[in-house]
Length: 471
Ligand code: ATP
Ligand code: MG
Image (cartoon, rainbow, N blue to C red; front, side):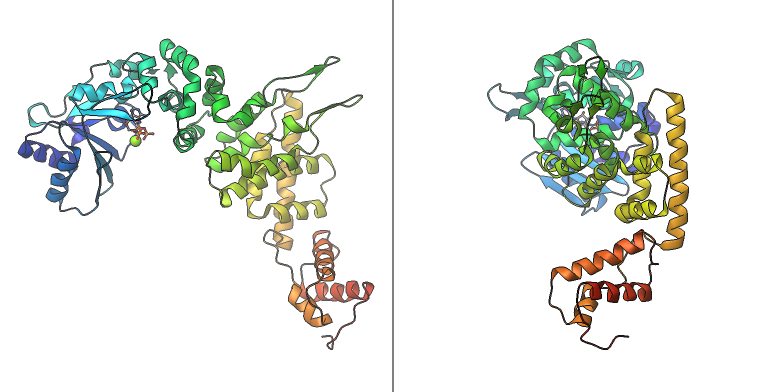
């Protein structure tokens, strides 16, 4: 193990431990990731004694000013070169049933290991001179790591009662590492799912976002569904479950369809927000579902309704309300456009409108739409994909020719007001829209002179007279 602790930072910590006469260990994710051959820059140090006092000595030794102390939590954080190091005193912890506040006492290393979430996260390596590099693994975490098992160090109900977020962390790690959750731990999650309600939305979403970045994110969503955690996390997704049968006519289960789209997308993109767009692209479906005799099931307008629902979903789940939300909203709103377009003749005008509406996000939108093809019929899939290739090719041609992507209207509202002596009024909007439509429909080019002529013509039709000489 020593070779993994060869960095100077471990040497320094070990020397300070010797001088201070305290026992110090690296613990948790960093140790786990050594065995998984994953590179990690976060180091968690547990000190049998005061984490803050020890961090102070280490900072002094390193002449480091990049250190913060969190007295309330008894932790300290030190940044050194590429490392982000957290110090904490070994704790013995137990939560009262009637309160979320833990009773925290100083404890031994093993006490501290017991209050970790999983055996694979409770591994510790000694930094003490006498046994530097020795692995301390009282719960056989190494064995679980080798076998790919997520297991709690104590009785699962005890571990999960102390902090119900751990139920979700079990699923996040299982998804991220492609591990399975041990039976008793899994049963405990099913039994205690409702305890998740006491956990803050922020902590939940941190785990969900890590889960979403896994290679196969559906694994996590399926586990959340099977254990009964899903309704406490994203009820909008639970609402998409199920199929209805009317006179032998069924629609597809939108929950499983969504997960398939998400997995497809995950093979093509590492953009967290595009993955969210895939997850949410059909959330408008449950509320727009209708059975129309002679036609079957329809979800008419689910793109518009879905896009309208996004801000509330983001607000409720404390996801960012900035351009990330706008991006997801735009993807949801436009997700049907390329497919509708490719089913008809792909006209230049339709392509320009799509480019205008999607702007710089056009490639993301096309990626989402390609992921959205989940038909079981190979011929259908092939046909759609080849249509999309045509759409992509046309998009490129039109973009090169017309530069529509970041369309700026060649005629400003100000110029219209100046030319016809107007104050702000609806005629200005009419003229501007007429020019925009003409450009997008290819009646005129995206050019000042052509747009200017059209402005004069439209104004005349509206009965407006120039107050300035034209030119
Ligand atoms: P990641 O690679 O996602 O950072 P990690 O295991 O390092 O994974 P962190 O959230 O950074 O996860 O936590 C560091 C360590 O702290 C964990 O390995 C675990 O030992 C412990 N830990 C974190 N959160 C909890 C929790 N809710 N309950 C118990 N132990 C926890
Ligand atoms: Mg970590």
